Length: 239
Image (cartoon, rainbow, N blue to C red; front, top):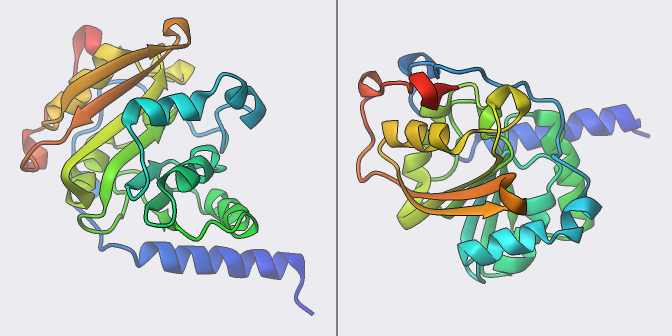
């Protein structure tokens, strides 16, 4: 009879093989400049307890602001323990698709168990890299990054390598705390500056939780910039 350790290793192997086969590698990380500001470390697969988040209606509010509806395809980038993944799955329904992406195989293994237990047949797991989400071509209507942008080691690479996965009219939405990156947040001016450096344009900005948190929505560029042309943000915006 297999041990729990053996089953866990098998699950990790299956998740890795399945997720990595979703899309070919994008532009290598070393082609992109590093951000000119600190990058926070990854410390947990969740931002806060789900009960706490549900009490303030976090996911419901964000999905309402983004107009998430049945049939849409949404990428939950940095899915962690799956707070958004399971709620997006229910919102987009059987005709929709959720790509639950993360760079931590153990997070995806735990999320796979949750997806299986809850019978979420419209969720596809994706094992990405810090510079590349490895998502299928032209597959995503909304890419959602929740409380993790400040932990992205190579944001310029991720934003460029995300572009092929976006469908016409797609949006990129980022939810983060309004504080310094080393305090696990991203100042709004810094976020707007870094996405603008890659050609994204901010089209919506929603302060939440009395301004402590915000949701910023961007449209992607029509064409990916050359990595060498990207200039990291400096000065006030880089703090």
